[in-house]
Length: 465
Image (tube, rainbow, N blue to C red):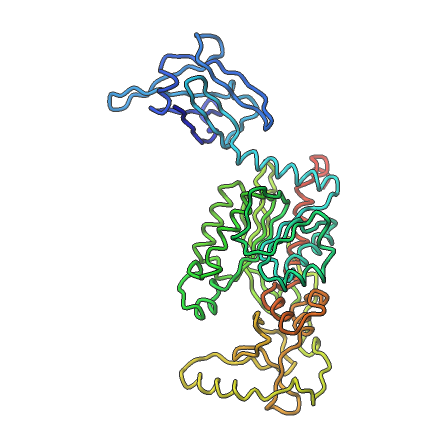
């Protein structure tokens, strides 16, 4: 018989301790026996071995606990036996067999130590950070984070990316080759179909969780009451957690619509990240506040590995705007001739608006003349010219309108236009419409670099700072 106990190093009046009790120990030890302790070095650190012995100095005594007239063994291992390797609050794994009892550092603790040491080592030697990316899209989020980190003096590259749409993945590879290196792994697949038999460790894991089931529009369109009911996006958080567990990143960055914070998915994600030794910080960020005309709001989650450091929880107060927002929309417009066929009457939309208003439906186009100081959220299928899109009104003929061009869409979000270079207007708008506001996540990347530099200070540097 074998008993496995996952527990935590506690603290009593006499200091730290590990204890276990109950019938689950009876197949190995009995009250009144003694256990001889020895520390053994292993590949992952140390292991405390306990074997039944005669009474001797330093031996651990097996006492008893009596409940309902039933006597059960109780083992308490104190600080003089545990040594320095086992710290208060640390998770440990106890294995009880008829030959021995072993106490070893839990795999989660080893993972925390490994990813922390890996991250600190790269910062100290100025090595490139390796970033893993899920739901890559056209790479707007990745571009912003890489650029922000680089501006703070931390270089990085994409160790692996996962994207199910071939056209988006191809665009990222073609237009942003500097994100990748010879050992980068490009995965064209649904994220849930990726087999993690041999996971690739990364320093930062990034995921723009699909919002099609979490946003108000997505719920309405798909006739669902909660994000988890969405056919394709509802369970994406499970795959995200699988990658976190397998790839053991030091940092995790997630983004989605603000409504996601109220979802059961987010509760599970936050709970599991905390359980695996991450400190989770969450904030809603507004594009207008970071220099973008588009006021898209996004939930942002930054999870950082817990350490013994006093500064191991990310603070969103580190963010500040690196870009200046244009005063009005006219500043980003291309010079489109007034007789261009881009200007249309869109009579079918006018008919639909009239019909919707009669039904009490308040949806309608957002009409701009160029004097506006902000733009509402432009969606992925913007190129279709639907009834809720943003339209620019003709300066001379109020019955004609046009959609923003892809280049104007870039400028509205302050996305570098080379990201959508040589793409059709349709694909370009898809990449931009489902992407993030570049200045927001550039600022986040810079702040992550600021945070990383802060935690990588030596004691002498910290004292001098």
